[in-house]
Image (tube, rainbow, N blue to C red; front, side):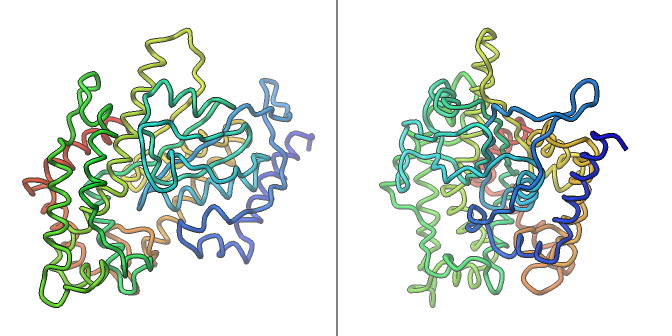
Length: 391
């Protein structure tokens, strides 16, 4: 066996050993809030196969940035992170805050410093500055590959409600949280989103100023207004309210907390791609791949393979990428069949109970309820057009 084939074999066998090791279950023991503290040692050097088939060291000029949102991309992000750590010399980047402040959003660009040869993972990015300034900010220290996971707004809203309604709930914060946003904060959103949600150039008109106020009014009309719930928290409302009302309350929260940022980022990335196409002499320092979780659910191997190829690129062979995509598909199927709080589908378990036909029917009924709702059907329907156009 020549040296290049030997190195490829060692790479694949080493990864298989890591994935099958007894302690690998700990990789999935915690939720998204703990991802950034988990590391696997990187033991295999970065490699590239040149035109003659010889394996050589890869000189990497890219930073890698994975962006996702609540109920969007948990499993595949874990898989990519594990593969990067196990099969490449890409290092895990430090914490990066893609917002101008940890507590408030503004139209300024975030002060992110993305370094070459490092992987960053961030949830709910606040990217409200203009597209050209955002390009300069994100690519100031490296070319950047951005893997952006998004989800259909209707399925995201229903999944979010069913996820937090589980007994016991997977996330403790819902017990005492107030899902309603104050008018002072809501009034800031139209200004922050003016370049994307009401943009004549892009052709989008997603939400008006009054739409944001309507969300606040719906939320306050449902929260702590029903007999017996006057002093209860968010979780008690999800358990006690009729499903349609619980869904609306949860949707009020997820739209403001996550969904508007997801749609804003999609449109912002469209503006960046348009900026590059209109200025062909410029070096394209941002490469963006947006992947829909709805399509991943329908064709896990194909969509997952595309994501692995985008991030791992020349570091591993096509055979290894095929293997990773197969592992993702098999693990996804296993989790949906045998239960996992982070994956909800018509085949999944909720909590400790197998999904029954009545629960599947409830999910479809809730989706139909949102689509037929005079307010939510219009708002989420416009967001759906954006997510569909991006993927």
